[in-house]
Image (cartoon, rainbow, N blue to C red):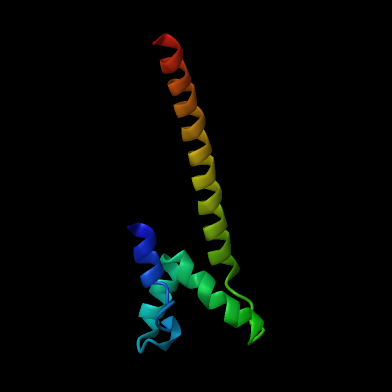
Amino acid sequence: MAMIFLMFASGIFWDVCGLDDPAKTKLILAINPVAFTLDAYPQILMYQTPSDPTQLGIIGAVLVVLLAAVLWITQKSSQYLALRALSV
């Protein structure tokens, strides 16, 4: 459900930069990593303007932390399931 919300709020169906209030545009781009990524492509490819390195760093750090958490949970749960299967 969260991924569906992120996709609809990202600007796939509407232009994020077309909002009247620049504060709302900045908020959506700061909160939603999908919207930031979708907005960064045309900015870089068509207008040759670099994207915000701070936002890219934050998105990268969050992805690394999430990947580490998934790997840790997978490792712990697989050990638990293996021990559970052997003890039965």
